[in-house]
Amino acid sequence: MSDTSVYLIYGNDEYLVSAKGKQIVADLIPEAERMLKLDVVDGAVDTVDAAVTAINQCLAALQSLGLFSDEKVIWLQNASFFADNRTGKSATVQEHVLRLVQLIKKGLPSGQVLVITASGIDKRRAFYKACKAGAELHEFSTPEKSYQADRVAGEKLDQMLAKAELKMTSRAKVAFLEKVGVDTRQLVNEVEKLSVYVGENKNVDIDQIYAIVSSSREALSWDLADAFGKRDLSRALLILRQLIFQKENVIGLVVGLENRIRELLIYREALKNGWLVSKPGYGGRPSLAWGEVAPEVDEIFASHMGRDPRKIHPFRVSLLAEQARKFSRKRLMYCLEQVTEAHAKLVSSRIPPEMTLEFLLIRMLAVARK
Image 1: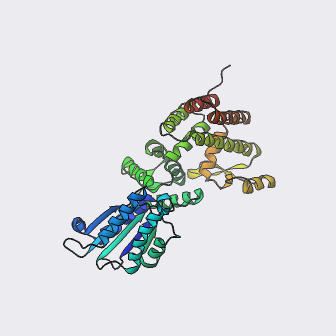
Image 2: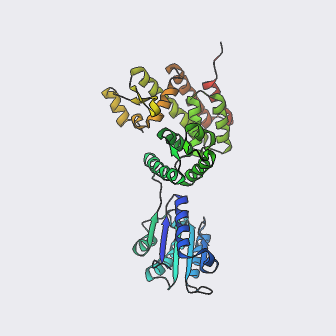
Image 3: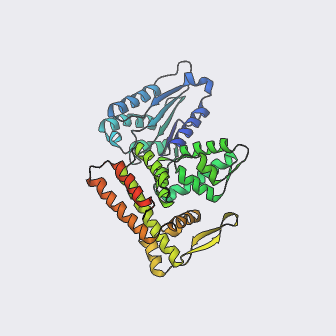
C-alpha cells in the first residue's frame, strides 16, 4: 500500500480525471483483491440530501475496518459537491464536508487510503486547503480561452497519434480538430476509429478524416457555417436538421452564420486589396497567407476584433479565402441582411424556428432563376 493516504484528482477534463483515478486505484490494489479492499462511493449528486448521504458513506467507510484486512481504499468517485455550485454552497453540505476535512487533517486510520475524483473544486474552501497540505493532487483542466484550449488539444492529439503510430500532416490535424473539438474523450475515440479505419497504412489524409471522423456537437455548428461558405445547400440543410434534432440553441446557430458572413466579407476585401499572398504549402501546393496590410487595417485587426484573422492557421486561411471567392460582396451583404431578419423573427415570431432557419438557408444559397 502507498505511503500517501489521500489523493485528489480534479478538473473539467472528465476523461483524464477518470483515467488518473483508475490508474491510482489499480496501482494501490491488484484487481484480484478489489472485491475485498475497495469501497466505491458515488459522489455524482445534484441535491443536498444526496450529497450528505455520499459524504456519510465515505466517512463510514473510512472509519470501519476491512473484512479480511486492515488495508482498504475508499474511492469517492465523480464528487460534484466540492465545486462552487448550489449544492457545494449549502451550509448543510459544508458542515458535513468539514467532518471529512478534520479527518484528513488528523490523518486516516492506518492502512486506509482515500481517492477522490471530482469535476470541480472550490479552491477557496477548507477542503481544498486541507488536501493541498496533506494530499497528492492532480489537476486536469481544459483552459477556458479557446486559443489555449486549441493548443492543448493539439498537444494531446500529437501524443495520441504517436501512441497509435499514426501520421498526420498539419493540414489534416487542423481538419481533425475542427471536427472533433477539444474534449479529450472525443479525441481518444476518434483517433481509435481512425486507427482501425486506416489499418496498416499509418498515414492519415484529410479525405479519411472527413469520411470517418464524427463531428462533436460544437463542431457541427462549424460544419453548418462551412456548408454555407461552400454554398452547399443540401449539406447545410442536412446539418441544420441534425442540430435541431440535438436541440441546439437556434439563436447560437444564427449568430454562427452571421459571424461566418462577416468573416467572408473580410476575406473578400483581403482578396480584392491583395492582403492575402500565395505561399508554398504542404506538398508544394500553393496556399494563401496574410501579407502586409495598411496601418489602419492593422489597427482594426489587432485592437478591434475578437480574434485577429492573421493569427488563424494558414490552412484555415486558405479555406476561408476559397469560400469568400464563391460570393460577391453584394451577395454577402444580402446574406447579412437575411440573417439579421431571421434573428429578429426567431425572437419575435411564432413561426417554428426550424422553418425560419431552413428558409434562411434556401434564400441565401439557392441558385437564383431568371
